[in-house]
Image (cartoon, rainbow over all chains, first blue to last red; front, side):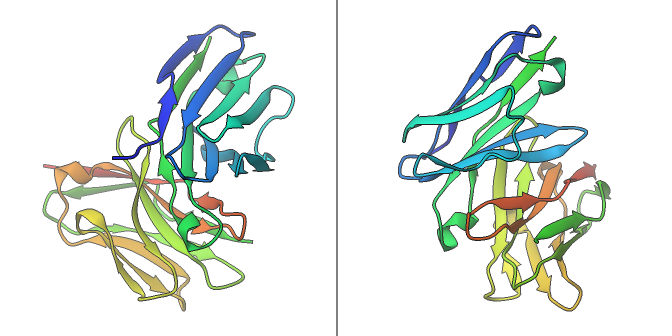
Length: 116
Length: 113
């Protein structure tokens, strides 16, 4: 049963610290998405990649957030420095695209980040 | 530009009664629409999708949705709610050639015994 995995599942850190979240997409999927979910804003798309190249990162605060795909099996989302307003659940999703297969995204379990 | 609006932030039903979660869409062309479900502390899971084939789409767990172009709606229904249906439901529209999805704000479904 292929799944998207995310680590860590929970992270508590102090303001100003660097946070790195990792995602392993489903093998063979060529598109990776990063989302942030909060009670106030709901589900927001931060960035996404196809074939490891960034397609859109307009949803991401550029001064402190960065997203990369060092290889096809790993996507990372970094926050440096972290702030309390970054507290949220961060989801990674993967899929196939473009074309009709890109209609489905498979979500990981999320990383719950708390910045104090 | 594509967008979806979920008309209710919270819906409460009794077990065994019908479920209706409402979603309206806006699209400049024939849309591809989805419903995802999120159980507590879990990621989103695809329930069903409409991609310009049959207007009545059946999904997992007894859910279905009907695409109505005249009403720009894609409401999610289930004839009889089960306790395990309690979750948050997200309507979404395919954003275009880049492959992104645009989600609504979500509807939290509560099921009372």
